[in-house]
Length: 329
Ligand code: TXA
Ligand code: MG
Image 1 (cartoon, rainbow, N blue to C red):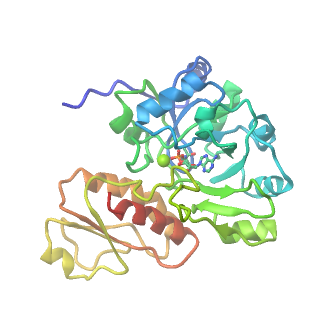
Image 2: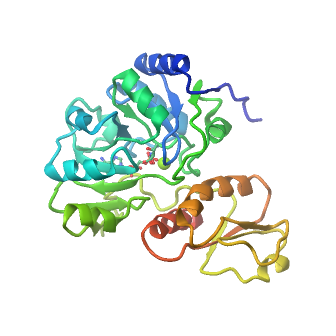
Image 3: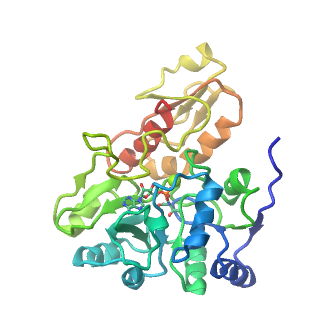
């Protein structure tokens, strides 16, 4: 039997924000809205508080957390900055870009999973920003899902899976972007490397930095992970996911117990046929993707078929999440 959720969902009133800021200052956990996906936040400088994040998510301790800051000026509190950080911050913060930098000693080893680096970002969601300012703390927050499952894009998603393990969720409405931030390794400002594609593309970053952005293999030849936590199988529904360049319009009728998710308006409407909007609207597809996968995962279909997004940029980020969702366990 699944335990009953106990988490309360709070609207972002001044009184509620003050209360949730106090919870965080006292070492508690709060589910928070960001523009990408919902996070599970704790005081990033308090290893005891951060340990609870790993426990609530069932997250292995070799997977480091992202530290969220109220403003770019706060980078110095937790990391060693460089001129490339300033350029990117001016253009993209607050926003869905996470930078990996050399860490300062005040960041607990638990947060960085023992690495000498720390991932930082200044999020854009106005309620989360108010909460950050009110706590006066850097807040460590991974996506607020059980480890390996799809990231949450609403407060209800957070409650559905973590509601029996946390007490407080701040409701900021549906996430505007819907997939996790772009992660850029900027430890060496002369050799920026993309660790996770997101809504801010490698091409945009390269333009601002005036130099090319490298890609990162997620594993070295000997098998060690270069970017911890970027496990291949991740962001997965329980139902098997199958990917298609284009779904054959006749397939849904031939396989009625499987769900078929078209990017565009489907050719033949049916109870097992769904749409993510319109293939020319990639931001809309990104925004709806995780919500749709979650919903279909509860409906008892034998498989979920999804079309890959066309093109590059945001399409790379969408397809990265789809490939992880479809990867064998
Ligand atoms: O959009 C987002 O980034 C969301 C919201 C809540 O901000 N957060 C998020 O966190 O997606 P999470 O924990 O699900 O993914 C963070 C990933 C880790 O799995 C790891 O791959 C990478 O960030 N990461 C964190 N610290 C790192 C470090 N020091 N070096 C390399 N990669 C790091
Ligand atoms: Mg995650």
